[in-house]
Image (cartoon, rainbow, N blue to C red; front, side, top):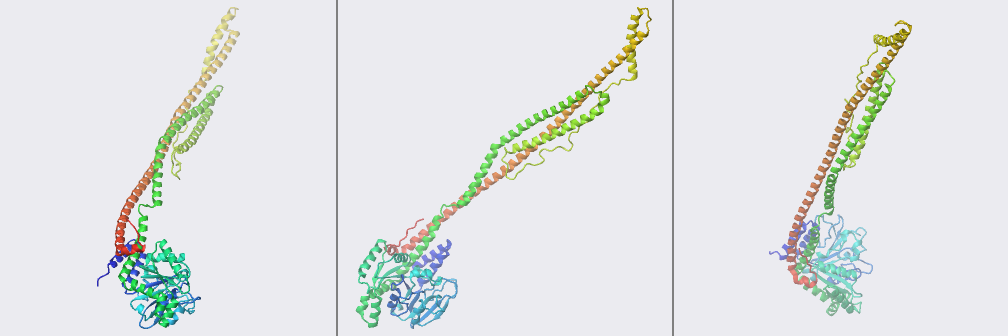
Length: 625
């Protein structure tokens, strides 16, 4: 058996749907494929409520198999096909909802267990599919399958009466109307008492886009004397919106009455002869043409749904990911630029502040030591170093120790303030703090040595006696010679008294001279010790300051290098991410373009099945890569 030409195109379309993750479309196309490969052709009768749809189906098969009445509404599809013996089955919903089985059980729903099937009398089907169903079955009937011996159905036609379209939203999922693209022919039923409504026009548009053949049955012409005017206005409205569908005026009442009486003239007047002729000519006589049309429509619609997301995805990178990568790159570049801009500033601040601190330290130390030296000078203006040197030595050491501690403390405080000032000129990372050991007193810091005692000349008793004799000799001789003129001897009481006076004065003068020399020696020793302390302690402070400056400089350099390395790494990662996204996007766009070209080629081949027929129906679609 040679496969029809449309089969390979339909299979290829199913493959395209699966390749682009549209399993739902592939499932529908597989279902349609199974329907097309069966010899039966399905006629879907649709319409809004109270348009005579079920009565039309009853009149076509001359049997009361569909619910008819002002107080009755069809709640479940009824499938009517040929059978040698009348039979009816109710398919009930005793499982999870799935696609409705409108093939009379010939193509079961995929991936679902078969529902319950309950055999009922044919004359009871109409009641069970309406609002008067038995309480045990009410709301659970999915479809009703009816088999009756009819010549119209014997050639393979299957009539499907569906619930009114406005009822679908209130029914259970399993009781919904079959998809229009699963029908070979759609018959839209509208009564002749009024023009086509907006809902009917929308349903008609959907039918013409999905079904290969569409008819309009204008019912109840026996009740509307103006049905010809209504039909003409309907044709005008269809022409205005670009729809071309054959309209057949019919009367189900006349058809059923003609069937009962055998009146052929009445049957012709009912319009059903023309309707049956259209169904036989368009459905039974041309199954291959309908199959081609059906494949062109359902496959074309599926391809259009696949192409839409593909075309929308071309050259559209992920905005969130791209924005995030670009923001990271810009932030890293800004960080690197800030580091470069601040690199000279903070080093200048550190150098200037260190120079100022050195000058201030020297001034402070010089001021403190000069104050101590002035106190020492004032002390030795009246005090005898020979008597008070030990006390002065203790006071001098305590004063210098206090000066050293004060100068050290001021150095640490001032350096900490300087480090914080420099840190404000450095772009420090969040959470980074100053280390505590930047400037600390060394454990073996400079101590204050004892001052070297000056050489103090003692004034011994022998020295005093010698000084007294030397001084008294001049007094005795001078006054002795003076008194000798008066006739007295050289040594007399007056000359001796003058010698004693001169000797005492000589001792006092020598004592004062020696005291001043001792005081000058003490002041010199104190000054020399203070100068030695100043030189040594100043050198120690400068060394400590230089060490602290180096540690502070190394710390900031390390922080800046770490921040710069991190920023460079972030920038490189962001740049690589952007480049990778661009490469991936380009590859993706190229692949999409190739897929689009293949799909467009497939679409053109699908439309070539019935190009003339589809164009005439106004159902052509245009897509390009």
